[in-house]
Image (cartoon, rainbow, N blue to C red; front, side, top):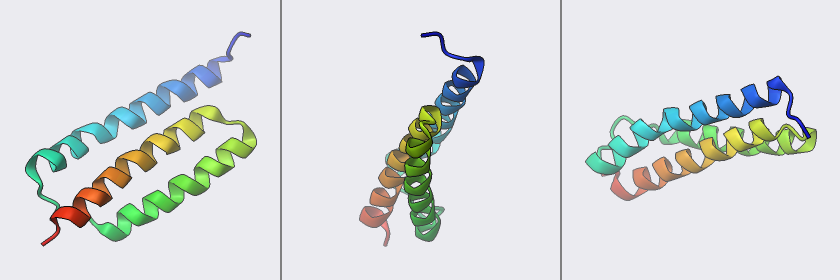
Length: 87
């Protein structure tokens, strides 16, 4: 089965979305400085990722589902770090 160019573009976008979060997460992990993180923002992003992931699954939009899974995991890591190191 040959993938259409829109599916390829979707997976490329997913890859860049995933990569875009890595520098911030690595910086927070290394510095343990969570002062710039907003827990309300992180929780909202987590909820949005779950909702959009379910929606993408229902539509069989796998690039969107994969992107939201990567956003969810990354923001869950940031929230855990925030909860561990917030003074």
